[in-house]
Length: 480
Image (cartoon, rainbow, N blue to C red; front, side, top):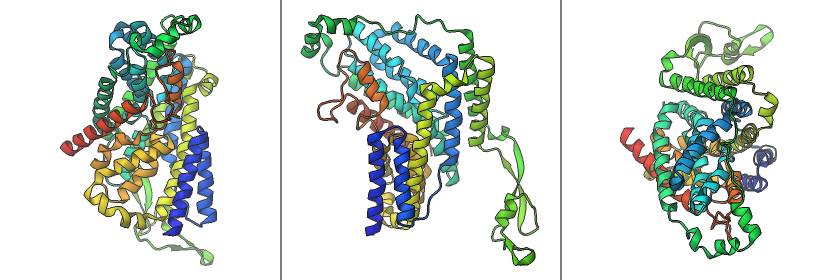
């Protein structure tokens, strides 16, 4: 038990230090923790989440190429037109636009261009920018559990299917999207009259008395409406949407997927003797594609959805490069591709570290938690949330913690019901989207706070995640 606690502290310390450095450090410093567990304590290494990593690479490559073609600018422009058409409803419309942009592209890092526009509209309407900006930043991350190409959703489906819960991507989205929309609207409603109005805020009014501050706040106008979007950029968006539609259709109608024959080992087959006294296992024969009576056999399998997503996304990226003037060099330099690759490294290191620790202590975990889990299975939501506070990645939380949850005996519908709880990294305001939102708000009303936790994202974040989780849990309780 002592060693188990010491090793857990190493895992937590690696996550904490990684989160302090941010970016690639999350995955890299997790590697130090992994090395200590494997080489220092002799633990058997777990398995890196390669399937999820491949999907992220394919999805962010496609989204990055779309951004390089100018397609992302067109989406932002469409969102801005809607916001400027109804400026008095900015507190409700702003989170909806950032949410659906994330749902579409699979990453919350696409909304940075939209944040200055939200602030600009708020100021011109006389609305305290903290109200829409705080909840819009939250919404940009909430959309990750509602995107068909996001790592968190794909990992949930893949891991769930491997553990006997046959849920599809559309099945997850039919729970997460309505639940998260309820959470966002609850957070927006709570933010509608948040703080003092600008004309009654003494700190803001004091700023306006300084000519330089007045010019800084009201002198500039952030907009994308003056940009001319070429048809090639619009075509890239159409290709991207078509790729998403293909993925969803295959997920809904798996009978359309191609099938093929594969060789697998016969259960409990004995090793085969070779010349010279050597032997070869049934698994090795199956890997080589050799069929042998009583040792290996052929079976028909359908193409897996994780491969479908990879094939479709990579193909869509190629079509954009060929037909939409998207330059690969610009895609690699863009924020979507770069943030996606950071997520790959983070998930790679974090999930591998967590799997190594939990797989070696699964028996102990089950004996300690089975009573609580059996009586209150929904309590796993608090574990998901706390882990997310540490590691700043919803995909990494799913990959690292979902296998443990299944091994503890928690049923799939319960875990689907608490899926929104994997977003908790707003709690400590060090995530790039939150920091960027603070910087984009020229009025200074969106703040980190003197005491760190009293920041502009805490209230909408807690309301949104709590409401979304409760609604999702109710939906799965009714329909599963």
